[in-house]
Length: 371
Image (cartoon, rainbow, N blue to C red; front, side, top):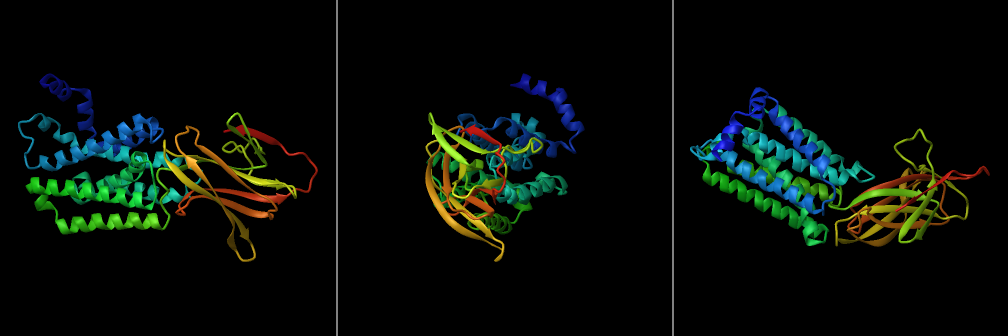
């Protein structure tokens, strides 16, 4: 162990960190974010579960070690040599765990419902960079830790319990709140410097405010239904099943629209059906009821009218997402959208399209995809 420590002490990496210590915390935060972006895939995959659980465990232990360092707790121990790198490790794990939430929901067709988290993430990033005390500010430390912990448990608990819903979300929040308060109490009782720096009622008030805020966002349906995500959504002319695969026929988009291969304008012939296909990611063994809420925009009343809610069940575990579709006949021309929602009304994504009555006899350019 002494040889390893001596080698690290004289390494180029340590000299680099000391030379650029002003920017090292924010670089470690971004580094953790990029690392998980490149390596994480499915939330129910063993690798992902191990990495995220290690991130959360290491963050907790490092936070504990960092807050006791000012009291000389690690003097004359191996950890004393690494005390100066505790803040960098904390930033790295903050970045890594923050990225997990983004990764698992950036796959959704509609990012509008996750915009709140991205705003919080950017605010958190700037808070770490511009606050004078940066990570040494204990109020900032524990606030960010609780936010990260809350989001971590809200998508990890459903994977292990194999169920989701409002009660599971509330349970996840209680687990996060309890574990965070336990860590704070443990550090507060063990560290004289922490007791001198913070006022416990103020810190608990901040943690409680974050708890209420996240729950408020959930009940206002501003947080996606963790850990479900909408992989794909298409308005199609025909859907058939061949050898356990869904064959979806749709109008092909012009080549210069390189980011999407299907048209958002649906050329409708009176009498035909309009299909909406969706592929939904769900962790293994997780079962959930899903609704396609068909809505038509009434230009006169300037509001969306719910035409019909059509439900179906999903069972998770398929790599390409669980597949399902609904259809409507005798539809009106105009703007349409299909909200893909859970039975609790939480939105996974929105499939937008416009129905235009076909006048020309020219043939349409179709494409097919198998799911």
